[in-house]
Image (cartoon, rainbow, N blue to C red; front, side):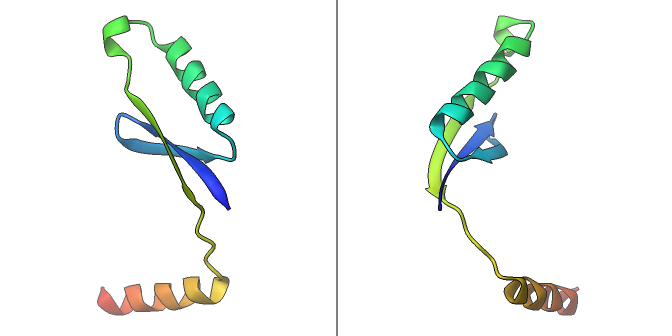
Length: 68
């Protein structure tokens, strides 16, 4: 499934199904900024959403607990 990942100042802030949704979120965040010099940098990256089955998630947790 294709997703659009939204980053604000290099930190992922969410993912949307459409590019338009991501642009709306950027406009909303920019409208809340009070000073023009403090405006954050935004980027949108298109990618594929990974689907992790519950069995894979359980096995991953077991491996992490062994490493601790």
